[in-house]
Image 1 (cartoon, rainbow, N blue to C red):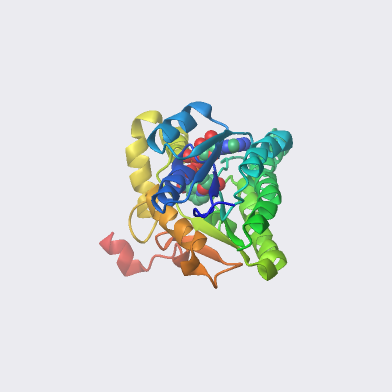
Image 2: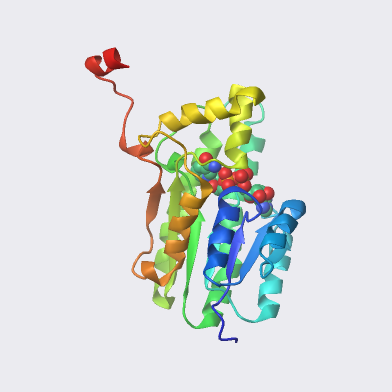
Length: 266
Ligand SMILES: NC(=O)c1ccc[n+]([C@@H]2O[C@H](COP(=O)([O-])OP(=O)(O)OC[C@H]3O[C@@H](n4cnc5c(N)ncnc54)[C@H](O)[C@@H]3O)[C@@H](O)[C@H]2O)c1
């Protein structure tokens, strides 16, 4: 094994929160394995981060994930960290015509994809002899829901439970496991949703409106979530495991009750 910092694998590294996490981890000097199903965007990332290793894989496909991790295995340095940021947003109620297909799609990436990545990452963390850190990107939707996100919200609740269970299983080998639960974050996923609901011509206005529902008055930048991810990966978080940490601008701290005098001021 080399004396360099042990590497970190980031899923969903080609865009949004995963990309920001990959860039933030690269700043620490650790090698990044950047896994994503989007080869073009991965190539763009790697042209910026020449030490990063691109791994094109689909987390919904077990063989594809196994092939990606075989590259990590061949390199022989193990893993110090795993960031699970790949995920998909789905919409629809439980009685929608395509509800079951939506449920299966959401769970295959958001839950089974994380399970698979952790399945392959844990043995690579043992290999370093120093434990490791797994950070799973969940969501505030694990705690509170908007309309039409039954399957997506269920995946995020499942992730928080899975994080707690994995933290208990692997604490004895100093593998810490935590979830980060963001509010709205300005990523391609959020911009896609803003175009769907507010129209392609109103994306900025829709995002600004969503931002106002957060007490801090705006949505997050991906780098603000990446800061928390990097902290949880690092030794600075050496006694943090099994936690789900909100990075939500206060979104889950308020409720929708408006007092009459506040209504008049508004
Ligand atoms: N953006 C938000 O407001 C927000 C809020 C809370 C939670 N989240 C969660 O954060 C995570 C990242 O979201 P984002 O906004 O950065 O999304 P994004 O769509 O902007 O980026 C996600 C990346 O994951 C990749 N990906 C998706 N499915 C994949 C698969 N099957 N295999 C491999 N790669 C795959 C995509 O190609 C993309 O590069 C998701 O789990 C999402 O649910 C996002």
